Length: 277
Image 1 (cartoon, rainbow, N blue to C red):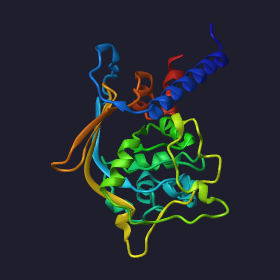
Image 2 (image 1 turned 45 degrees about the vertical axis):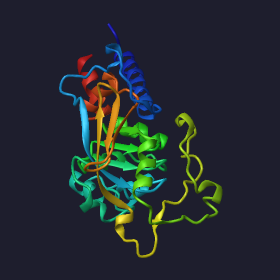
Image 3 (image 1 turned 120 degrees about the vertical axis):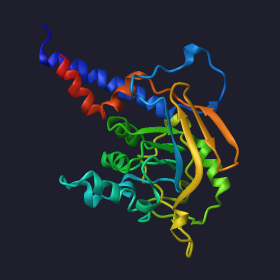
Image 4 (image 1 turned 90 degrees about the vertical axis):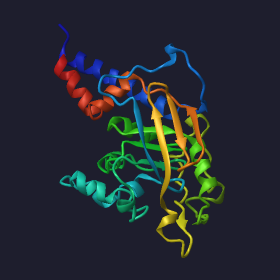
């Protein structure tokens, strides 16, 4: 008979493996869309959405860190409700985000989204807002893991960031160089294969709107739609009404990671596994 200690050790090892699979799915490099054989399709768990889609709400700027996503003053308030978390989500980035973003939107940001501290509320506040999926040019490594742990889906699509920047001219003021963020760090580049962590050095400043630009420079309802075909590991973007539609391959979301998301995160998955032993 297996001991409780052995069972827990097995579950923990299994959980680590599942989260690693999820991180690989988030950080997989993009490739052109192509017809794939049946064997290349991802199995979908019963009840898991085969497609995730919505209107793109773009939070423009690199280095949107966890303190910007979820203010530190709320982090240790144990009695805070999901409704309040949704209200203060991205408050430090743009106080108008709460009224611009709607449940079911797809949140898109630029490079190094979620850098900074390890607070998991950066992921759970986005979920509380009713946003099931975050798309970015790249993610901070800790945020990627916290997202999987808390059932927030994420996918890296650098091409989308570049297209948004081309279609919506920026009104952001250049971030000045500081002693904490030297000039060489101002232009954030996509980490090669997501192996270069931008969490370790002090993050470069988040861009701020130029004088007189207004809040529209920070959070935009683009009118674009984003669709993720989970079975085919394919994302499609329609650039507004009558605009171009393009697609590309992304990393697969395997059934074992779908299971974590379907159970509300890693904690729910572990509880189910313990109950079954």
